[in-house]
Length: 190
Image (cartoon, rainbow, N blue to C red; front, side):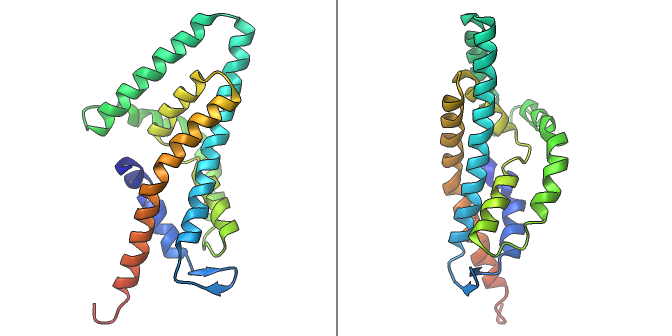
C-alpha cells in the first residue's frame, strides 16, 4: 500500500486538485464517490491486463502441451514475489527497471488520461482510472507474472482483480486525505 500511494500519489494529487466536488452537476462534500469510481476503473484495467496475460499463456501452453512451461512460469512468479519484497525493503532496485517495460504503451495512454481532467462525474472518474491503470509499475508487472501462472483468462483476471482490490483502501485513504488537506490549506486563517 505504501508503494502504491508513493507511485500514484502524484496522480491522486492531480486528481483531487481537478476534482470539482460535483457529482452529475450537484455540489457535494463527498469526493469519495469520484475516488471510488477512479479506483474501480484502475482495478478493472488490472483485471483486463490479467485476462490478456492469462489467455496468452493458456494458448501458448496449449500449443506447446508441456507442463514444464507452467512450472517454469510459477517459479518465475515466485522469484518476482521475492523481488517485490526486496524492492519494498529498499534492498534492490531490479523491480524499478521493470517499470520501463510499459513506457511505450504509457506514452500513448497518458495524453488520453490527462484529457480526463477535470474529473466532474463518476463516469469520467471511471474512465480516468481505467487509463491511469496502465501507468508503468513494477509491482503490477510482478503480479502480472503471477496472473500468467493462473493459466487462463479467468484465473489471470482473478489474480489481478484481487491485487487491485488490495490497493484500493490505501489509495482511497490517501485521496480522501489529500482532499481534506487541500480544503484546510484554502482556509483564510491558515
